[in-house]
Image 1 (cartoon, rainbow, N blue to C red):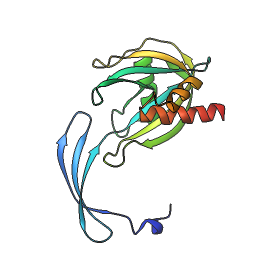
Image 2: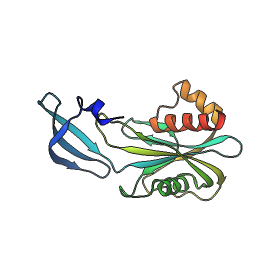
Image 3: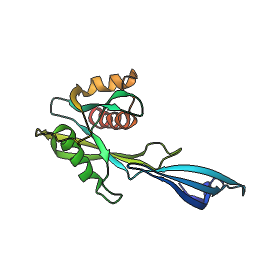
Image 4: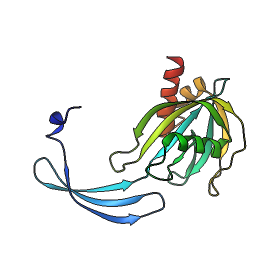
Length: 185
């Protein structure tokens, strides 16, 4: 994208005020000058970022976690993922850590699939998606407040579940469809 073709839609930040510092999110109230000169209020959730991984074994099964998600009040089926320890943390190392913590698995081969902006309408969260293959089993050690069930689903069945709307987690949908495209063309 060339900067000139976006000049008529860019906003300029004129003021930022932190209104909340939480465990995961920090909320800023931002005032932006619009292209027409008017001011607009924006509320931005700041997030350190995350990594997520599609662990695909030699049988063609994806290892997933089921966990309760308090904001939705229900259990979701997801790929292993977790937030970065800091903005500068190596995203591949974070993916390796989360895979081991949540499933006990390690992988011999890694491939970066994409970086996604999860909800750009109100958050700056960015998640790096990886494919992990050549899996080896170990012992999981989830965080103290993390209760997970690990399940395996064949990749082709998982894609079908996504198409049927049975998987609703955005990072999982993106990563699995990208992995399937890479594996199956």
